[in-house]
Amino acid sequence: MNFLNNIYQGKITSCHTQAIFNAYFQGSSYADYILFEILTTNPFGVQYIPNDPNRVLDSYLDFDLSLDRAFELLDIEYRISFDKDIDYSLNLLKQWLKQDNVVVGPLNMEKLPYLYYPQLYNALDHYLVVCKYENKTISLLDSEGIAYIEIDEEKFIQAWKADKIIEGRGQYIMRQILKKERIEISKDKLQKLYLFIIENLSKAQQQSAYKKIINREDNYILNSLTYAIPNRLQKLFIQRNFFKNKKNILFLLDRQIVLFSDMLSNIFENKDIDFNKFNEIDKIENTLLIEIKKLVK
Image 1 (tube, helix red, strand yellow):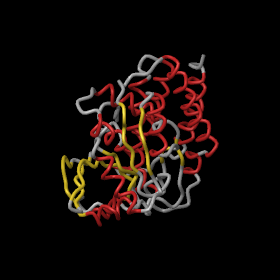
Image 2: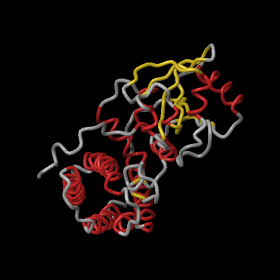
Image 3: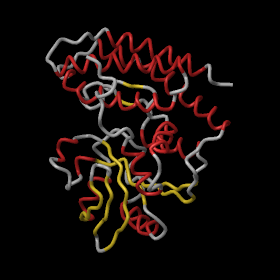
Image 4: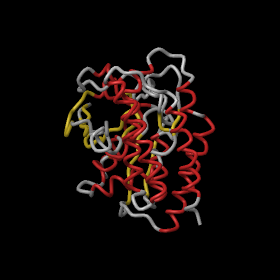
């Protein structure tokens, strides 16, 4: 079964990118979204986190830290606050909102009361746009199909506390872009991007995520892969779009897409899956690292 054209039909970019664009780059092109996501370098590199059904194929680089990379590569001026007292953070949020929207996160997705069965998002991280804060009510934009929602301050705090997730550099994280730039990258910054990608892939390979899946001990791996594989396909399609003119790299990405798609197809059809395919994917990641190193001048 060939899934290349239809295996993944969800959102291509992740919630951290969508929050930034909802807050500061409305009306941007599809290409801008893809480039920004690439500049976070989050799509590159995989880690396996044991005993966590949502993170058997997790991005190596924390989404929170990956935003810093994108801002650096785009020369975007911004400010960030985290791990402050809650009263201080709320007052600071009010001050920042006088200038522009504020992106908050990562936060506890399961604590967002407006989501349908929020318990389904247990221990998952998320990013939101705060556009207004008055009378102890927070007005939000959420890329999960919520164009505008108001929630009580106390419920917002429970989500913003970020105590249920492993992502993020602390509690009450918020950031605001102070000076917007065009979503484009110079030649020298492109070289720096390659170095960041190489760093991700190199460190991720040392952790041997795919081999750990083969040697798994948990009993929920198949259910976990129905979430993890589409998430990984999302990242591969982003990479594919960026490297569409690099034939050798494109071949490696397409091969991974086929392998992941075959495994996902077998899971959905209740067939046995060949876990040894993860060995091939691991080897492809090594070769991908070699090919990207060739791009560094």
